[in-house]
Length: 78
Image 1 (cartoon, one colour):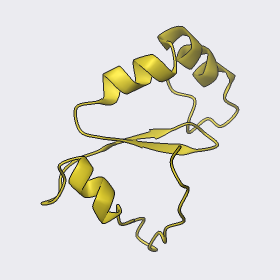
Image 2 (image 1 turned 135 degrees about the vertical axis):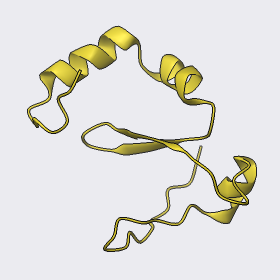
Image 3 (image 1 turned 90 degrees about the vertical axis):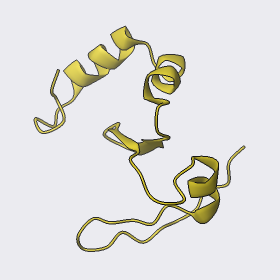
Image 4 (image 1 turned 90 degrees about the horizontal axis):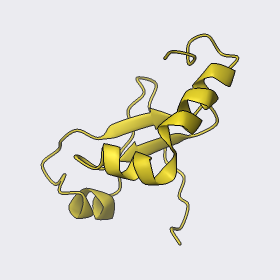
């Protein structure tokens, strides 16, 4: 199981990804990650893994229902 860690987010919204994660994800020289806002949590996904990881974690029907149930209009997009 992963060990939780706390990170500082700058006033401009930037956060450093730990070196071990950058190495494992092939981001040593920077790159893009996918950010999924679940409302109560944010998930970072490695490059190229978005669809596979999301498909294992949450069915598209369950995700659509989750989005429909959101009470925050900024997050409730389909």
